[in-house]
Length: 315
Image (cartoon, rainbow, N blue to C red; front, side):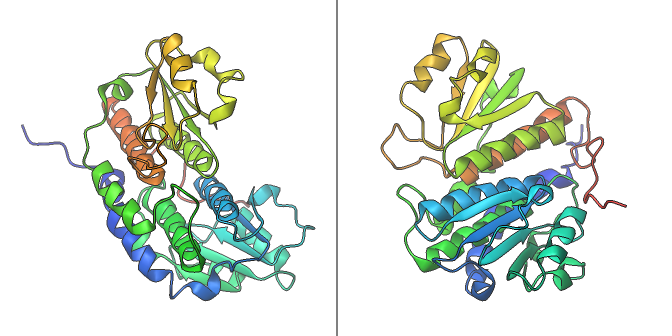
């Protein structure tokens, strides 16, 4: 029997190591568009892009490079003062992003990260970084989102050291090569429910992992800050249910999960030593792969998830 044809989403997921390396190289050319140390910055987007904005905002503040907020574009506090606003939009056509940039025009410098240079966002923002090599045919975002975050991470590297335990982008790309090839644990493939956890900048990644599972596979997933998990969400944990941690593991949490019969996956933490076994952004790749695997196992098409379009364009 011939092997099943690989989905477009799966093919795009597999290209992330090379996309991240290219983003690291592109950070020098994009320097004028990226935030500078000391600037008060807001990062915005919708859906997946908003979660990447959250990850970057937390990482930039942790690196000591300036106060950084993240907002969904529809919820942006337009009266607040910033030195720069960065908008992430793969399509360059998302209504809420374009509306926000129009409202900010002439008041605050704006930068857009996009995959398509021939879209309205190019004219709406003051500066634009085009990541066209990371564009996607799939409705579900995978490669573009992490490549945009890789570019922003590389921009932080150019201005100083990253927080302790956070790898440079080139080392994260090495981890990504493992993440696209390693077999997924059987426990996550057969689970009935998945909860993604993160701390600091990896909370944004946890939110994105859960979204990918819902979008591509229609799976029951949730996401929380890791320290909040014991404040209620652990109530759903039990046999056949997975708590997937991206980043550092809070003390005692593994015992709490085991005590109620749940399964903990924490491969991006190395026993509290500060050296993560797998970069959390690379660990996100495994969640992307799981979403595709679950969709295909259910007979769904991960390239064309129900109820979704590539871009939300409002009347």
